[in-house]
Image (cartoon, rainbow, N blue to C red):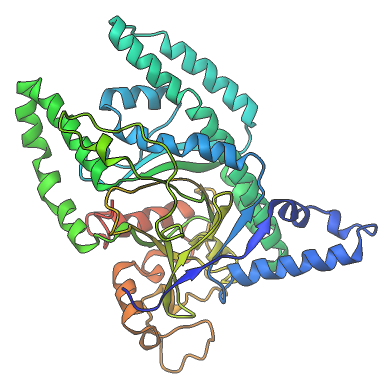
Length: 455
């Protein structure tokens, strides 16, 4: 997929302007006319970039506390991924986190740590509750002094994990709600904003994209643990063998240049930080005595100057690498927004590429998925399912300008559409979001899905 790769610097909106656009101040008679014209121009640009003729994403800059929270939270993704299994379980439990990725798979390319974030709860109350619960849990199950000392060090590293997770998550949720309000005004009605509020929750994910070194460390740790427990060692080899040598390894051969396979997000908006890259020192990381650099957290500049988030633009029939500042949030349109807006917003087909020249580079990011309530019903009335979302199948008589035929995509578009399950096969009129979510997940990841081994 090397044809037509370019760099995309997304349209950027200042957070202060986002807040003004989503408020009622613009309609006030006392509001300066010049300022109204400027904001209306921004609103038009927002819709152009999120609509059928745009890339389906934009960036938000100037969100308060973003730099501090990003610097605090993102390096913890790698540390969590490389923790001993028992210690990781304890830390996740203390901070009300779980995982939606099989962490027992030592060949995994992604580690993900997730939490449901509630709209109705403020950051301070959530943070206070998490702090009290963490202190209560840390006083339990004290063991030998050496283990206590090690755990105290780990607790020090992760003491702000839950609070930072929630605080950054709520910032992103506010951005999403403001953007939904702006889009609603352009589309007509309040369906996007109301759909978000009716859902009551959003899903936050702290994600670590593994380097080759990270997987080497994980396997080395597992081998050392197994060597001290002969009985469980034999059972572990028996149980884990298929994961190390079966389909997962095969998928790495087929998609070795991707951390995450091509897909559409199926919610309303996806809000994510600019990535944090880590490149451990080789002298520390590969010493013969078996000590590995597991706690590296210094940010490494992007080797290519972009985020390694890549999108497919059906209008230009090319792949574009997204380039943004470290202080910005990236907002992508999901399929639910595409459906609810009757095609006035366009879902974004994307993947995460890994740099082949730096095998030991890892990538950290934080994402919040904003979605409708599970009971939200989708209507296909007046909604054009574009051929770009349905494997390009279109009749020769079609004259819809938003309809992009398969033969116009060329080899690149056809290859991508062989990977991605078409929307027409996942969405039926009258489906609830829960049903759409289940069918989408099944086709992407299920036993018969096209990307069942994406992670």
